[in-house]
Image 1 (tube, rainbow, N blue to C red):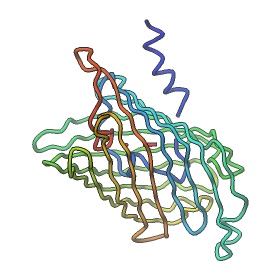
Image 2 (spheres, helix red, strand yellow; image 1 turned 120 degrees about the vertical axis):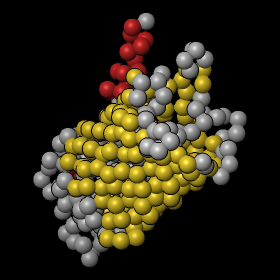
Image 3 (spheres, helix red, strand yellow; image 1 turned 90 degrees about the vertical axis):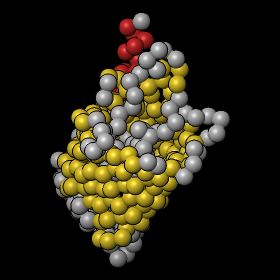
Image 4 (cartoon, rainbow, N blue to C red; image 1 turned 30 degrees about the vertical axis):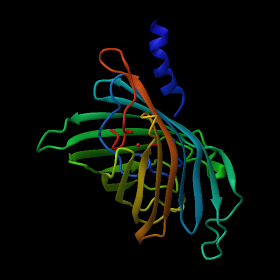
Length: 284
C-alpha cells in the first residue's frame, strides 16, 4: 500500500520540461495561475511548443507534463521534453544563429505550486510556482543550459462571472556564462463562451536573456488561445495558443497539446475535472 502511494511521487522525481527559451507555464498560455491541482487529482499533458526569433527556432515536442495534487493547496509538477534547436543561419546575425539543427532530450523541469491566499469576494487567490530546470539537455548542441536554473514567479487569479483573470511576475535565474538573469510577467483574460469552448488573450513580456540564447533582447508578446472540452469526455481537452511580439525583439510563440485529468473526490468517487490547471484551475 505504501509503495503504491509513493509511486506518483517517484514519477514526479524521475520525469520532469522546458527548453531554456520556452517559458510556457500555464498551458497553453505563458501566464500561469496560482491554483494547484485538487488533492488526490492528477493532470497529464502531451504537447508541442515553439518559440522563435529571427536568430533561431526552438521547439519542445514531444513533451509530457504531469501534475499531482499531493497535499491540500500543493501541486507537484514535472515535464519530460524532447526538443529541437534550429539556428536559422541568417547572414544578418552571423556568427550568431549559425549551425546545424539538433534534436534530443532538452532540460527537464520539476516544481511545486503552492496556494498562499485563497480567493474571496474581494481578494484574488495568490500563490507561487517555483520551478527547477535540470541540465539534461546537451548544452554543446544548444539543447540545454548545462547547469541547474530556476523560475521564481508569484501569480494571482480572480474569477468574475464567466471571466477568469490571471496575472503576475517572476524572476528567472540562470547561473551560466552567456545567460542573464531576467524578469518576466504577464496578464491573461479568459472567457467561457460555452460549456465546451473557452478563449483567452494575454500580454506576456520578458527581459533580455543574454548573448547565448536567441532571445537576447527584451520582448513583449500578445497571445491568443483557448481550450476545447470534448463533449463525452469531461476530463479531456484540446489546448491551443499562438502569439507574436508587439514590442521589442521579434518573437513568435505557439502551443498545441492534449490534456487529461482524473482523481477521487472526498468520498472516494472517481471524478474528471471540467477545466485544466490554468483556468482550469496549464510545461505548463
